[in-house]
Image 1 (cartoon, rainbow, N blue to C red):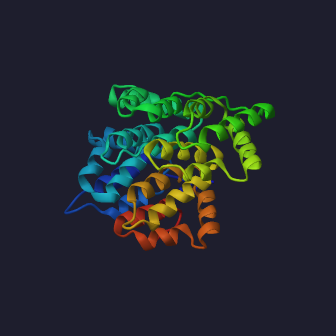
Image 2: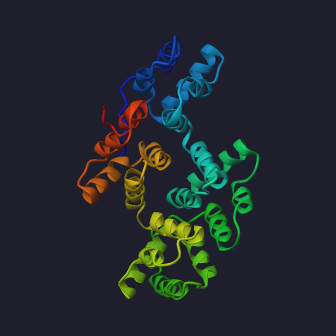
Image 3: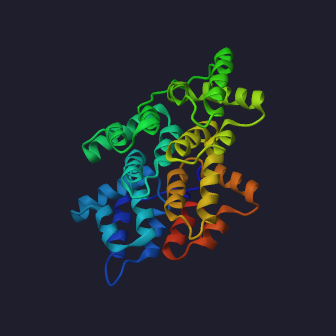
Length: 314
């Protein structure tokens, strides 16, 4: 379930006018920006953006970028984008920034449905005038390239059917491939990029039953290069994306100097989907409410905005 709290009645024209007022004078009225944008769903935000452009002949997102800054600006910017466009931006940043966060590409490709992923690829075309897979391929090599290109171009079957014999066979293939540190990863990539998520979960369960350890834990014993990290992310996202996101949030909050990029990515991406469920997983794992942990590790308008998306006012 979502954490976003939205009023029963809103007017995009009134919201656009209130935002315009918030931009007047010395420094923006950040409280007003959060009160409006932190409590509007994706459809309402697009209507506000449209109304703002019609009323004032300027793009609301560009105006926001010039009025606010830092982590607060990045969070609001990503929140204002439509989900497919946001994910296109996140993938582009992941493959082009200095740190090369390839696992973010795997995360997005494996959490989304087939249709959602297709929408991201379309949004990427429109924004960057390249195909997503072209840019992923240009910025990777070897097994990492094969895995990520396979994941972003996959159009998985989404039915509930499970072939138990196939699950057994492919669990054995996975075991043989990962038990050696320089295993045969071609087969692992083939399985992960072509099977339905339901089939893959059945395969991962067979692996755990046969070998007494989950395949994701087994991979943690391997070298932590970009390929293994992306492989581990793909398996965790397919297996249980809510547990995966809890771990991302925990690592972001507990890292030396909070990882604001990861924190923003998860909260902004999941606030309208299943952040309430992720919050529950977080509390069970850490005995601390996520909003309390976020409030402790962040500050200022950035903190207030994230708390609004978490359904908890400061």
